[in-house]
Length: 217
Image (cartoon, rainbow, N blue to C red; front, side):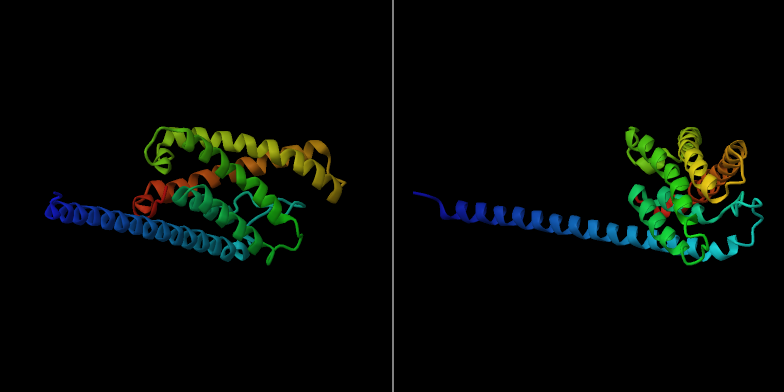
């Protein structure tokens, strides 16, 4: 004859287990939702800051005839967004910031150049960090040596993209500029900007408590 007490006990245990499982599932969903909100907030704030400094960047000294500055603070916020939140946060911030730049760009193509130049500064470090065995992929880039290697690779890819792009576009828009001058100026501009794009966000995010408090990957 079955023992009703045992069955009631088993049912109670099963109920508790199911209840705990449901609670855990709800906590996971809540955590994921919170992470999504934080990613959107960080991406939006840094995209907004990049747009806000765009008018200020207009007062910086620029290369004659090119309208490009050796130091451009706009992309610093996009790389910082990536270092804090990872690939998705970085790309959302960069995409939103690029759209916002059209409000201040008289040429209509400047933001596209900025997007193409900055994208490698996110893609290459993300690929290397994602392939690392570090528990927190974002912390992989806190190591100075690993970060330097990744940004050197990013700078090389940046030049591989921007030299052909400038040869095509500048030759059409500014036909009086020779090919050797286009290559020289493109190398110089992107070398300087790559240096600042790599250095400033790294110092702000990984040499301060920023990543420890807000890091999300």
